[in-house]
Length: 137
Image 1 (spheres, helix red, strand yellow):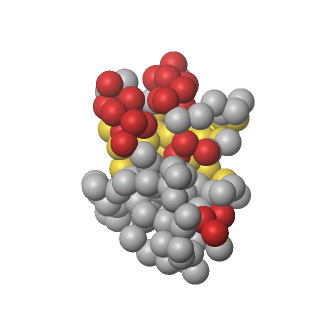
Image 2: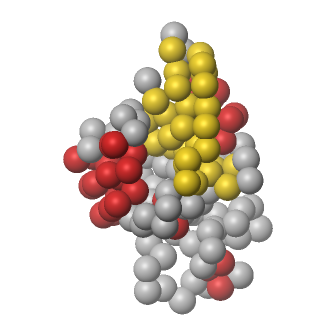
């Protein structure tokens, strides 16, 4: 199994469509056998789902994600665990032990918003960085 995590500075990056890196974990028998950081080469939104499919990724762990990207992942048959924060490595380990805290209904609706302290992730910006657009914070 291959698990990809939106990645920045060791943490789960909080906006799928703006991620510059994925950390991709090769998993065998519920244990990580290898992990590497992959540059998205400026791909955005729907193209990221294609990139993950080309890498034979089975699972994606991310922070926020928009509806179009959710559909693209579903069409690529990639299982989504969104709304995740914290360490990327810890998130993968939690998934493997069936203890991952995630939000199956996470919806990132940044596009065209003025952002007034909340970024669609259900919590304020004191808890995390929300990508390059900074959500007005």
